[in-house]
Length: 189
Image 1 (spheres, rainbow, N blue to C red):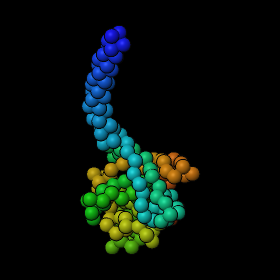
Image 2: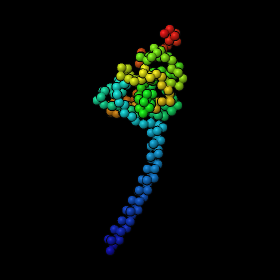
Image 3: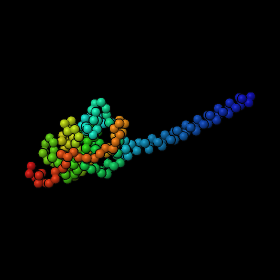
């Protein structure tokens, strides 16, 4: 009889523990999901980089592997962009697609293009000029022109995967892609 009473008490305690565990899980879930969604929407997220347009900075092995990068959305919220930054943006030609490129020129800069309809372009206010590091294989501002700052999605800051490529992404402008130094050179064209 004692054994049966002990089993009944254990079963009731286990049932009460299960109920408390379930309540804790549900309440934690309803807190964690909004916090996670807000974090991914406003602060940072990760993305797989596909294609050859940013080689050798990203995906140096080509089709053999894709880099996974950390995208800092917080930094881009006030359009704090610098020359040389690698950014994720909504494609001006296909709003369903996000692309990743390097910022080459900022508003007010004059840039010598590589195949755009004009040899030189002055970047209008609220726009940037973006290019891939692998010029022959990049769909970038040389195809669609200056990009509105409103299309910027995030700033790529780190390579997270594969582990042998863990590193902070460096902001730099290729030496031959600096904005035109003197307006005279632009006006002579």
